[in-house]
Image (cartoon, rainbow, N blue to C red; front, side):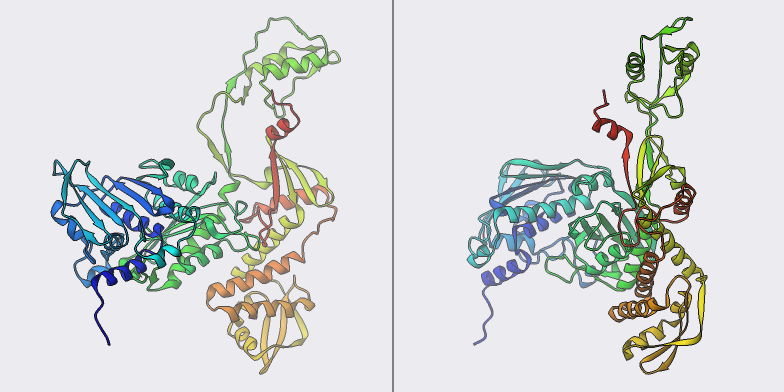
Length: 602
């Protein structure tokens, strides 16, 4: 027999859809606070989230609407169906408070600015009391205890307190990232765990929340899609994608297409299994995205996901090409060296005492290309040397003026030599570099191939007799469909049969024996996905393989001129700090670090 369910059962079903875990209740309550215009939000957690308090300084709820707020589908956010397609608020279904009230002991306390007093209403697992007057500051406070106690099945599937806490922590962090204009406090068992102040610089807040020192900003717009990101250098990676935070219209979401776009932007910069730090924000016209596709609003649907993908890749890739992690932040620390001296020669007993004297007076700073020449076999410092020192502006640690960003150039490195016939040793004024010659040359050749491909200038070698190659019929069709791209790459093919291709020319940098593998890689990529990015990925993979086998190898001796030339070529292309497979090209160490390791720092 079919019967209409009791309202209490319906409420529990709805609660199960909206509130699977305590973290989802935190999410719903914080969204309500932000929709109410709060600039300060506090979250207190106990018993792994079975006890919660969320307080804010928002607009509050009038006395007459407190009871209504605990009813299902009671909301101030929308009025008609059309409003679903132009949402500007986080919440809109009116289910969170009702769901929480049905599966917990809940107290809602609130005061509006125009009222001198506040009001409190309580719900005991769905049994709602009358509002009572209470002393309260402007805003709302929701207290929850015994969450899911009347739903044993739900309570049974909660994880450990530590696991539930970690989920809550991630939720609050997501709001911290999306709303730097709001202050957030997160406490556990009465102890403050996190605090982010109001109106914090978005990049600084992102660095604090992700726990990284350097994030760089990217922003741009394409097809009415605004993209903003705070991203990390390719050499600061994770083994999992927990450093990837995605936001659409200010909402934290999980979207595979957006995540794939970020990884596409980092293509040929990361090693296999590595993931970057990236906080990505998208804003687009309301009619181009649907946020009403999942009970927890954690997923979205785009009207044209390919446009979103391209916009993210282009904006982020363009920012990555500028390689901001290679820019040198030089603090111009200046102090005049004041030396007291007479018009006579300064007597120094011996060379050891002289070095001690200079170390002390120069505060252990390095004078590049400026030497105090010792006269009379090192026993005296002449007056003109001290005068020259007095006039020098010497960098020291005590005083710092605003930093000046200097564009890094590989050609500015002073080549010292080669180590193990594999690494180029070089230095700047204050840093020591080891450059992997194979990885560096690999990147140069790869970027040159990509540049020539885009310009249609790949040098070719033609066969007197076409090279006949057999492939599965699907691969033949895919390769012929990409014939123009193959020709730009230097590979000319014609169909010679249902499963046969006739190759008439290949790039000069690839051996005849390698053309089969190159075409197999190309066809394999096209069989997995289609579109311009699939073709570009396939070409990039082939060029990465080609460059790896056509450059200087580890163990190959290079002259100083060859090393200098390689560094100069690295200035011509972006991403020169990583090989096409994501391996680092160089390792550097400051002289200050080296001095500390040798115990030379005073």
